[in-house]
Image (tube, rainbow, N blue to C red):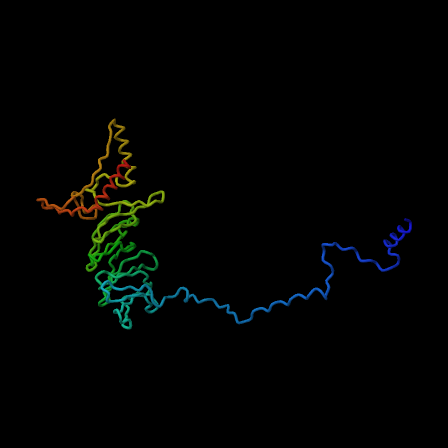
Length: 327
């Protein structure tokens, strides 16, 4: 036992011999062995070339197109498109099949034309244009023969939008204009040839736009409600100016106030629903009167109504149901 102890002490003290290497953790890697461990792979070569730092020219991104908005005339005899003329987009027209004979029919020099369309006459083009970007667009008519241009809505500070056209009335243009009141877009009928304007609907109900049929009669209008919803309104059935109605939700505040006044006096009120039918005033409804069938009456101002279609009857049924729910 004593001999073993002395040997152990000598080993611990070194005994004058070479020091032993420290013990290694079995989990740690040992010293690198150049014969067993391969050298690291050389770094991959970087790509070489001649990269460009040039910016894409703004003219490529925002410049005029060579051609845009290609249209064909209603009679199929001409093609039209937008293309630069002296650096400004204008309307060009060419006979169908003879594009090399194209010529500019408008001569805008300051503002490019973005919106244009054919009239159903096939002899006129219409386009929208504002002044210096004020977005108060006017409707211009261009004669294909001669290139004469006329402003059909020459009202300073007013904005016009085209509401409708029809091949059944090729010289009539329906336009909304706010020249009477900036926040109210009234609906007008404009004669394309003479420029004569006729008021169709005076917009006193903050209506947004109108839906017209193929005869350019007003069928519906839309209105934005305070909660963000859109209300669709029908126009037919009003018999006289100032007639009370319950055909819209915005009628309810006034009717509620009226009913409260009647109750305060000890009386009761009721709502009678009816449609003006043949007695409806076309000046108020924007369309001819209609009835169960057409008929005549011996009166100087009488206008024979058109016969009702099934869609007329179904629409009035829905309107009556909606009015009853409001009542």
